[in-house]
Image (cartoon, rainbow, N blue to C red; front, side, top):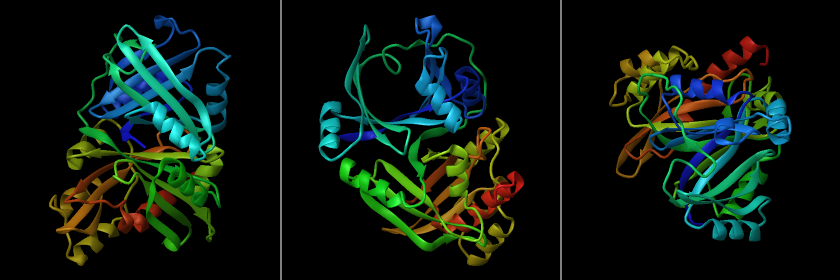
Length: 366
């Protein structure tokens, strides 16, 4: 399919300016380009932010006529509208996707200014979410035409060391997981990498089903979760109800030094889920420990999952933020993969979901 990498993730929000401020102060990102009244666009406002290879766009409506933004935010709250892949040839990727049954949002479109050309096309996934194909190899400025270099105030924050997008997770309604996994396999030529069935992911109160689809070179990864009946409401069902549909639950961002990243993020004001204290005691009893040391990860509340990989034992370090908006929907995951780790923290599910359920209880949604 000619997919090269994740490109950007675009959020539709109530106010782009205030959200962009949070992304600078909390995640330590830098605003590189801007689109709005000052650039001649009187209908919508967008900020393009970067941190190494992490690229995020924050968009809100200026004009009441921007119905697609208003309706999205009214229904879902602040959330991910677009997931973009950088591809080698937009026309070919789009045409192959359409031949395989994709739902089109818009056909290949050329955007051009004095800095060059960006080509984009999009297909539909997860209700109101767009999957965008981008080729910007012939563009010599930040982001794409319509944006200008940002010259406003820049907020200072501790360096978070965030490097790239590792995976993007979708939460879907009951009986939709297999449909969307099949859609990615058929339309995008992906493969199912991990499949968690009934009973594989559960706690005392809740359960879920999950599949991970990925491009066959492993560059793009999309876990897809759906609720599963249990004693009480699962975090996936809570998401579907509060988000009012299927959509993107979280974006996992990779770092090469999670200890430094979590320290900086906490100092910047980011809130994280609280890990049960028994988690680290059980790790000590297991006889396994990461190179960073159990004391170090316990101090910061970081989860660690060990994997058997070719040539030895790899492990994944991860921690999840609390929801970043008013609704208990979207959040971020910070991860570090060590020694060839390819998993998604399967061994951490019990502790993770107990942490999430504590927050659900506080919200009255468990």
